[in-house]
Length: 446
Length: 165
Image (cartoon, rainbow over all chains, first blue to last red; front, side, top):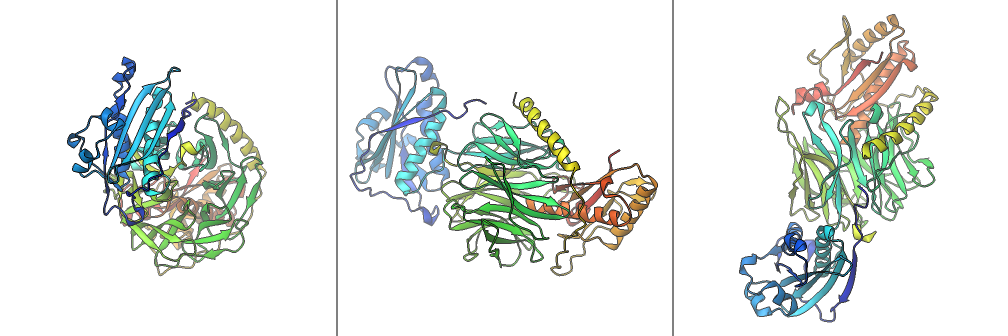
């Protein structure tokens, strides 16, 4: 568990942004016209040792980059069999005619070597084939075991350079791994890289665990556990394994989430049939009550500037979305469409709120502006809920369940992602059934 | 490694919590029932899944979709439970509140708590001491019928009285 995120140092050793890039990707339009990109295999420096050669990472790193970019729906990776130039030649001086011949608009090349201190050095270059220029060139230094993260960092740099937006590949997902029959489901906390690799189980499944949420700023997670049959909110450091009860409440606490600066936890506390919203300052442990209404107030989520909170209340008689100022004043209902609305989650960009909607026995994931206008439903299904934003606010992850038969078979939960555009819906493969996903911030931003 | 370390920490915290919990007072506020959105009187009235605390004392009551108010049948069941608990004054119970799978997880946790509390308040108003009754919500996490149909959902929207000693 210790030191599970290694430090990665990267240096800009050659940045050629002087030439205006002709190639850009408009990410607001969905995946209608993905950009054709050639991702060459990388090559090993001649003095690399044979153990490292066996790892085959000169092919694996570009493969991860290719998978990331393809999954974003914005890029189309050309078949490597059509490549004319060898990796080493392409990296040092690409013949752009060879790449435009196969309709590549962008080329990615790379080189792997070992530093004297045994650190891995991975260089990559991004080339604009159309204007025959180098767009960027970077080198990453890290311990050899950490090559997978380098691939994600390279993916982020490419995404950023071509779309003008931050990437979201060097991130992780925390979720609840589910196994066993529906009437006696075993639930474990699990964390994995955003591409589904490197899954680690953080609890044993002896008690129900629900709704884990990543801090947007570090490796803390808040979640709800039925440990000792007392449903309570906990704060867990997934690097050290240390955890702590959140607050000292005489009943169920649930629906926890971090404030966007990571300093507070906001959650519900249920007592005498009434759920209200509370915050706890993580450092000072000071607890504050924000709502005081005999209805169910739950699923709170802070705006990124910390000034407002969106939440779910049935004070109108049924579940709707409300916003209030962070001191609990100025409560306003913002959802007015047909059906029930739940799980509001504020976009990291601040403009939109993602939600779950139940209408005519179907569940929808949708987005609306923070004043409730511009409602847009992205996906409809038998059951789905709990959207969580990628740190760049362009992609949502959520979970979906199918109906089970009379014996309870067939109703497993799976993780899915969808672009804000409503395009590019994708199943995220997990070893077990999975629910309640939460996306971390960019690991490299720490 | 991880679980052991964790358990110690949690244990300590849970102990503190228990001490804190003993000192809490009982308030008699009942939540105002939500105004109905059309008539949704789909509470289960059958006997499947029902167990008994004693002869003629059913262990559970059922609720309509999104509701936590007690139906006539639910009140009748709870009246029997109250009589039984009065006759067995050393017995303590926990009321487990549940929801069906057709709602968001967090809202269902709150709804389960509201249902269990409705049943608890009925027992209290029938003369059972509040300190004999605990409440726990499982939301939609513990269905009794795993099917995805209206019958299963109605059997899952329930508050179950469980003896703790």
